[in-house]
Amino acid sequence: MTETIPGPAAGPQALALVPKAEAKQSMKDFKSDQEVRWCPGCGDYAVLAAVQGFMPDLGLAKENIVFVSGIGCSSRFPYYMNTYGMHSIHGRAPSIATGLASSRRDLSVWVVTGDGDALSIGGNHLIHALRRNVNLKILLFNNRIYGLTKGQYSPTSEVGKITKSTPMGSLDAPFNPVSLALGAEASFVARTVDSDRKHLTSVLRAAADHPGTALVEIYQNCNIFNDGAFEVLKDKEKAEDAVIRLEHGQPIRFGVPAPDGLGSKGVVRDPATGDLRVIDVQEEGTDGILVHDAHSPSPTAAFALSRLADPDTLHHTPIGVLRDVGRPVYDTLMAEQLDAAVEQQGKGDLGALLAGNDAWTVVG
Image (cartoon, rainbow, N blue to C red; front, top):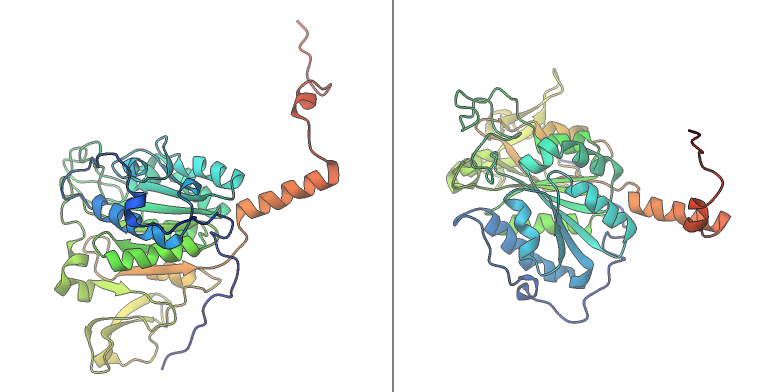
């Protein structure tokens, strides 16, 4: 037995203030004249093509779209988009994008970052953008390695990872980016895979429509320094048992189809521990199988789902939108506060403020 879970209440969309394009656009309109300089076979190519192909669907004026990146292989992204963009400072892209989105609400602001850029030097900047719920769309490319600096272990590398910087194996426990985002109270959290164009595009569409911060983790292959890291999620036969495709309002079933046409495995909550576990439907039946609720006000269930995947084998990895909830958007609140201040006290005079009497005098 399963319950029906409603979708989110209708509300203003994230792109409502961004001017629309005057003419119909195509993928070609979003390709820049720059030579794409990633290693042949890099997963970044697939993500770039998906984004360039998806942008025309938004119908937004190109001059009102901005891509901001930090440092890393993925952070070359703004060069290849025929929009405005900034290749900024290591780990600081969320902060720069926050200022841009807060001061220019007529822009669609996207952040492109990697697991090293976002979760190492940029970790503090990322979590604060998420908790503030700034109107940003953050694409976090996760290849579980440092690619640009030639193959050192990253904040998402598995324990025991042997690299140039950890010849005897990494001792660090890895971050789970989705868990981290949910812990920071992100209002939209999703995961997808570089090679699944259809799924990637659908997740990008949902992120673009979301008012507030949307974080999309993209598993992306680095074929030079960490080739095959996500092969279990991409191989058709292996993926049936490894990947849990989440759909709002649908029972969480996956694996080889059972007689009822749905997956032969399901996710239930263990009554003894409260943790989620995977069951064989033919052995244990369908009672108790969870129905995915991406719009639940509490992130508890989404967080539990994010912990299902084995960090070493990646079996039972959920992909799709884990959380999509509405809460106040930072830039909207800030604009309302500024409007209220002007209404109460009038427009300020910066020159008068700087030349005013409210200053310290230092006596020698």
